[in-house]
Length: 202
Image (cartoon, rainbow, N blue to C red; front, side, top):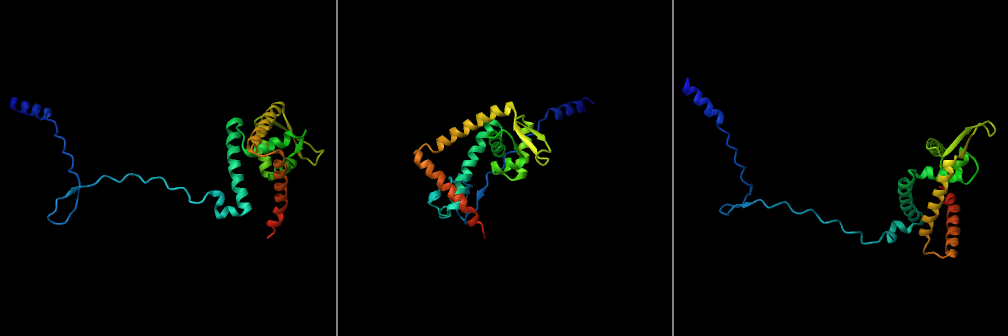
């Protein structure tokens, strides 16, 4: 019995010997040559080279509409990030606020027209602004049962901040232009806009 007890204690104290790590893999070589250890993985590839042609000179941007859309996309992304960060407003809400702020009151259809939004986007933006307490919406029969949108006192204060921010951003955009060049730019852009229906006729 004593011998069995000592044997049990001995087995309990015995620790498992950890297995040796597997030997490194070697590369197969021709007969008679010395095998070599596998080489480490190659370093990650360097970043891709920039395009050889600047964006302004790319053939796609030789088309005026494509070039304007590219510039507009960059301007829109920058504006969207700015107004999201500082006012928690998207661009549709910003456009609706600027439209309503310029008038005493508007119906939703007029908000859509002045903000250059489709009716569904304008309605959604007005609902967001109403939830934020920036506008009030009154259902009335005096204008064909249309909803009349007005700025609230809080909305009026926010509108002034939005307007001033927009002006500051525009001043930076045209900082390298003379006043006459800015007027010429506006005139040319309006003429481009007038030609859009003709371009899209087919």
